[in-house]
Image (cartoon, rainbow, N blue to C red; front, side, top):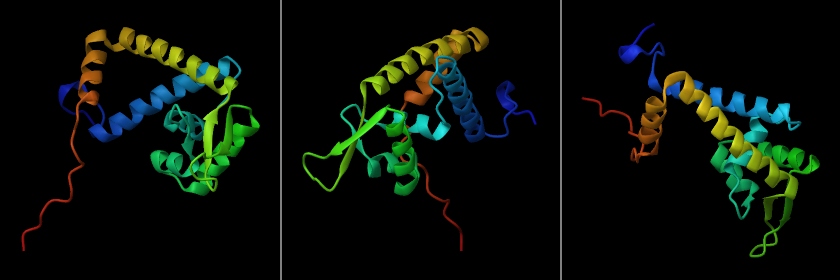
Length: 152
């Protein structure tokens, strides 16, 4: 199915999801090539983690999964030595998830790899297209629209 503007995607939302998949697959392949094999779910934990740390509940909310699912992902990353959990200084009932030194090194490497992947994309589709895409995605789109009003 061909749309306007040369796109073959049936809709923009699907095209954006496929583009995110492309970046995710490229990044995880490059990390795996360097000895850090992460699942997609594990990579999302790193993307959602705040620099000062995050609670499991906050991570789950940001990623859009249950607390139990996020707890499993965090536990796996702790067992790999990439994350640590500590009691929250403000509320001892909460655990704060933070990067270990090894985890921080993985994040630094991932950032470098994403720059390289973006450069590869620019070579393939043109720097002007990548810049335009970045500009559009950086704009404030406002709140998502609600359902259309129905006539009675």
